[in-house]
Image (cartoon, rainbow, N blue to C red; front, side, top):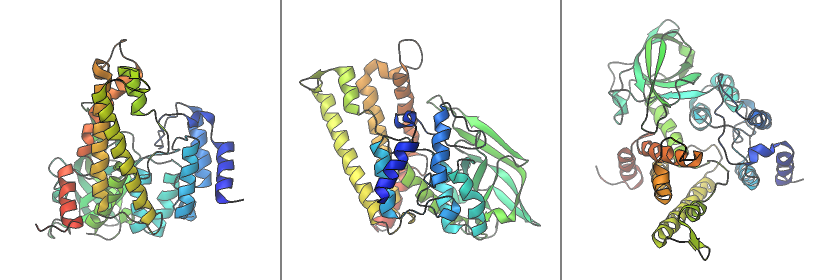
Length: 388
């Protein structure tokens, strides 16, 4: 049998029917909750196949699929409308970074646990005084025997209140240039001295947090790459993050189209959206999304291997994915009219309340993972080679 045939047969037998419907996916971790029991069943079955991280080497919890096999797997998952078995920073950010920069010992310790959904990760980059100018960070890590002692704080640490481990940029050399004095450490969030304070957002959630480190002791073996090479590791990880925010390698699930929402809320005439202005905006959005899908697919197909590191094009994808998401959520609220502006009450259903929060949450896309202004500078310098 071909790989496609065996994949199709396995998915048909092992993917629960409830996981073939629209819905969220688990991000795993020691404190993971599974509202639907099938969510855990689906995660465990896919992890055993190595298909939560299918392009990773087998010895690190993946399946070692080549580019063609990975494409076939994604196509077959899309065909049955399967939910992603696992999401999160482990798969899209620290996992790929460890594959590129970590030691074999670090990969064997952390990657299989990521692939099985056992550990949830968060990111310690930005600080109250170091956002877009990340290299000016002041969180200190002082070497003491076999450990580093960390003091300082990080902000906008997404999911830190539920995370098990953190990957963190710290300053280890206080005499070198600001870029050369940074190192990359990973450590358990239950380490004594770690305190997390959630930050409430305009969307009503509190996924962002401020994280404080007070004499946190981290073994030197948790240093990724060499001392002072953290900026190189950190920049590469940001490229992985921006690629993820841009939607490359994202969900295989089908979703109710914005066309159907428009017909439901503003009506239809002759099979078309009744309002011509809304119809024009929906068509423009669909055209942009289709063009973007083709561009990201071409980029993936041009990669030499499934695990090939992203390039500076990740900044372009991040901007385009961000702007499309903002446009989509704004159009959704516009289509719903006053029903898209509800916050609570019996007059709004769950979809409508979700649209309001999604519209507000989308605003953060232009900040997280590097602001749009920073992305434009990277594109100008690194892709277009424009003068400073």
